[in-house]
Length: 260
Length: 257
Image (cartoon, rainbow over all chains, first blue to last red; front, side, top):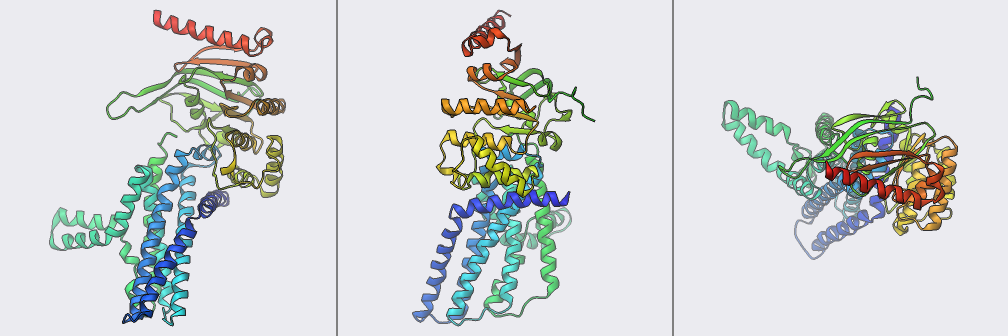
């Protein structure tokens, strides 16, 4: 049973990846990141001070923004596009559940986002190596936690695209990916300065919103910190898994009732 | 335990409506559809545009939820995994991933159906040959014409040897020669014992393929008729006369009432 489900999820994910790669989405992302990171490197060549810190900070910001944008675009278009171009019909006519379809699509979007992240990460590592800038072991952890955050972002994109239109889902997911840090800080302030129901509401809202800044090791990489403890990574993996589960369950609740 | 007496498809008292915009009332797409498709039977599902044919077909696949009524496929509730495992489906407008090749497309559907790799490859090549797409196995679908995509759609519907074929506007976009080849193919499939339920506006095709026709209008079954010698004799024209006369009479009686 589990084996059969794995085949279904893997097959759907593979089709999503193949379709997207052949559309040259990944090539565009690669070219864009090379240009941006190379631009940052060139500034150093022309005498910008503090090259190491600058290069790390600029490159990691590029990784963060581009991988988030890619994850949102990959995930929010998966389900609406399948329905709009009617490719979902012969797929869902097969003996698979609608939940399996969503999981396959989520895995496809996440795999694509991770491939984009690996591409950007490789380009930055190569650039840093060429310029003699050390990224340290924490860089691996940075990429790993970034991949987990992208998983949550993909689940969010899939969930939003099931409840609203694709453009609205893209906008909302981008706003949330950037804004949860700000919202989270505001909610913590409210939680700390209020009592009773307001405090509980602020705490619940903080817990319900995926806090993408928890996965962010950018500053630590830039300032050359040692790797974080293993339990932190495992804890964040559990946090990401929980959010993915809840978001995909919300997506499924809507998608099960949707007329095709 | 399934027996030969269990019909391939049974629809009882089907009613389907779609929500209106904002506070507009729901739009009734299907009001009263009752029909039975026996095992090995080929049924033509006819009616004018907007009669409720595609909605009925979508209900068989579980794509829309009926307001009332019951649909069973070989005794299994419509939309269930067991029911869908028995069905090969061709949607009204068949569109596939433009960046995949026919072989990759059939591999995708075959794996979802649970077919192992080696038989899947063999079946895919055989089906592409049967629908006239041999030699185009590795060409991207984005370069295919509408008719070629429809042929691929027929191949994916036949993948895994379904016991019930549900085809919505099967010959849409296919040229006359291709239609004849498709008719021959469906005749072969029917000879093999597969039940076929299909909607079409091509009455020639219906006349030559069907054991029985079901005429629907405004979401109701107007008449069911076995394809007798009289209807077959004039091929499409006799059926067309029956189709038009019956609909005109139905609408006149509706107005009078």
